[in-house]
Length: 196
Length: 196
Image (cartoon, rainbow over all chains, first blue to last red; front, side, top):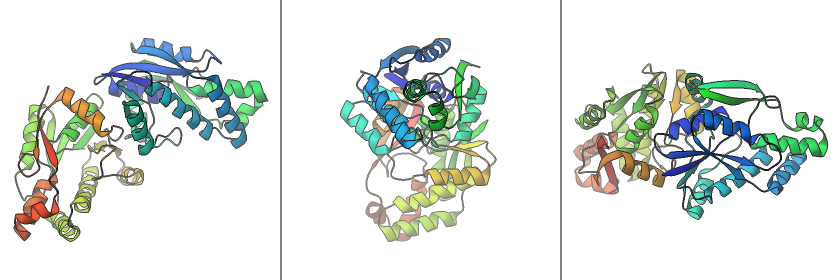
């Protein structure tokens, strides 16, 4: 069975890939808006981990809608959720037998409810799998420590390829670099370099 | 890290074991009330799969409370939930670094809410993991078809070792065998014999 996993190069989606690799033919799929080249960081990590990789082109309009929402809200949660749901819809239509993402039990964003999962599956005749949704933050951290080589840093400095990077670039172009600090609280993000 | 997985010998908890075995030292743990010897079926399957196995002795009082609830309700859901929560509490106190069960995304019983999971983890300093909670029924069925040798049959006929077997035995002793058909709708259960 061919599975497409939404992949950022971060620790969560990388751990999700390792959990699934014995059970599916996993392709790591990174969404991109043609705004920046950040998706290439995910491709590098996918290659280092010896996974198949493919980009998933999304309409720039979706990113612009997300940025407008983030500017209105003053925080990124709803805008990122908007992009994630769109990315899952596009991935579900891409011909895989199953699709997956790296959402954890304790994630506040993005989230995929049971009803949303069932709807995706029914409309696209695909299995949707969230392999980390039964793992809490501490369990994920312990597995990451044991299995991955990870770089940790503030979101704006590290090399990573979730769609936040492109959203931040659009936001900076529209409203200046200072808008990034206003709208994105400075949380740490991670970028995986290799498996141990 | 040592992980104890609540294990019935059924397809869900067996698949959960396979998903976790590359990441934890997994021991399959089967709850028993000293009512019947059904737990031995789970031990046989654990041995066939070459997993560590240990029984988990629960107070017979818990089973009797569950059966009283099932007789009051006329259906097993709340009684089984009562036993499952008690089993998780006992397993959490048994000294493992992490504990797990085979609950699926679409299960109506047993269920473990995010708040219950967090409470278990905080009170017992243990990770609680539900590796199948991100998988829907169809995804589980497809993985089972690909990876397990499974026997399927009505609950009353097949050899299995979830605590339902002992609850049914207590119910039959208290209220006669016909009470089983009244209280347990005839759903199919599965018993794993080996991996493919």
